[in-house]
Image (cartoon, rainbow, N blue to C red; front, side, top):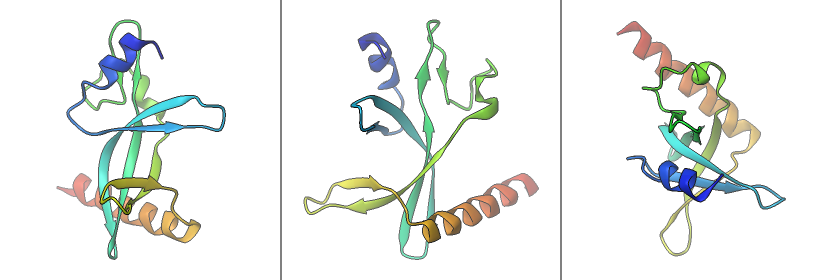
Length: 112
C-alpha cells in the first residue's frame, strides 16, 4: 500500500486496526461491529482496500461491487497492562460463539 493509500485508509471515522503478518506486510481493517459474548467483546474486522480511484472498499456505502465477497476477521478485544485495547485471536470455542452471536444479530436486523 502506498503512502497516499495509507493516508486515505486512515481517514475513516472508525478506528483503523493494523495487522502485520510474519513477513512484515501490513493489512488495514476497520471495525464493522462489536459483538459482546459473555463478559468479553469481539470485533468484526473488515479489510480496508483503497483502489486507484479512491474507492474505500470495505465501506458499506461502496457501490463498486468489490464488497460482494469480503473476508472478515474476528478478534477478541483485550486490555493490556497500559490500559490500551489490543486485538487477539479468539480461541476456537470463542470463534464459534461469536459467529453464532453475529448471525443472530444479523438475523434480528433483517427482520426489522
